[in-house]
Length: 248
Length: 120
Length: 135
Image (tube, helix red, strand yellow):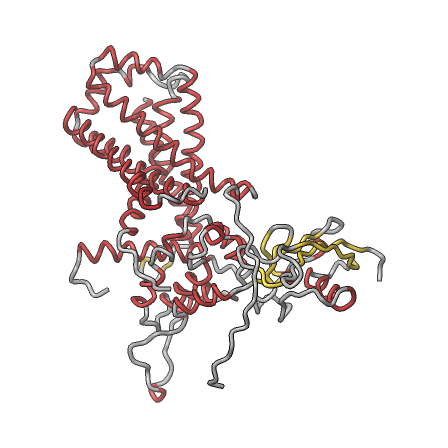
């Protein structure tokens, strides 16, 4: 093992001891195949067991380990030390969320919003099991697949200034998932979801800054999902006046 | 949280989108022709002379074209200004921001209509 | 399983977002510039409206205003407005392909082709306008 080390500057917040977050700097051994999560685990295991943070799969599919790394929202399991070495790495909790402790943020707000957009297949009548599966062509799958890749890591909420300024905004991931289900050929819940998605706290808060799509680790492109929802909602709005006999 | 579908926003957004398309496609060249072509010596100054402009603008299609060219970007700007002020923290007058911004665009529309279809 | 549980109460710290958030990164700043471009475009079209209005005021008034447009102040405004208007065009047309999916039968136009076509349209329309006024 080489003697190279790298400085990790971590936000600490112990609500039972302090009113405001502070910082603590650790020296961590540098290995060029380590990610930031490896550094955090080294700190927790060998240096300071009191450091609190979330992680799980360590391979970019669970969405647990999102944090601000040098001011940018990233997955710590997907961010390599070698991209920063020999400079110091600053780790802060995910922006725009209340901090519970150290690097752990409160995501209840997102959970409520995710539930509100009803991210499941809604059907007026369920198809009986005996009738077999819902069939879907490759094109029908392609229509929504990109938006189904969301791992709820919340990097997009950290990147979105609108969510930062006004947290009533339903937010990129929830709206992208609403779009995912609206685009699913098996779904019949468009009207129900639109009440929430096309509310003034939904798509209309968005000003297409586009940062959400830039930081998304799964290339979901929530910004595109929101803009497409705006287009569809607007088209339907005009149709409801110009063709009131329509069925949507 | 009790969500209600917003029934007026789609209209303003559609005006913003139409204005943005008009501005994106037409404004750069019109801006260049109107303001930079003469100083750069690319334009015969007589093209914008009183006589030739009055002749161009007397045509009803020209009136409609320039009316659209002038009015649509106003709605585009009104929408962007409304949201940008919000993002800069100027939010307390959120109701009158609607009236201020879109009201300004409507005023511009009225002015343009008066000039194109009444005065000229 | 169905017993009500006590919600564990915890304190949180919510950092306040500064109104100068858009100065914090280059991308945020360029976003604000994109929004600002609409103001310059609006300024230009109002100037154009004013010019057309002066056509109703007679040849002398109109001509003197035309001459004032050639002064450094106006040229500076037009130059800045032109840069902003081009920036608006590129950022606007640059995203159209991501938003508007074009499908003809079973063929889906790739977003890059869609974007390229809108830019071709822009250059074509600009050439037409240029031809009409600059020939």
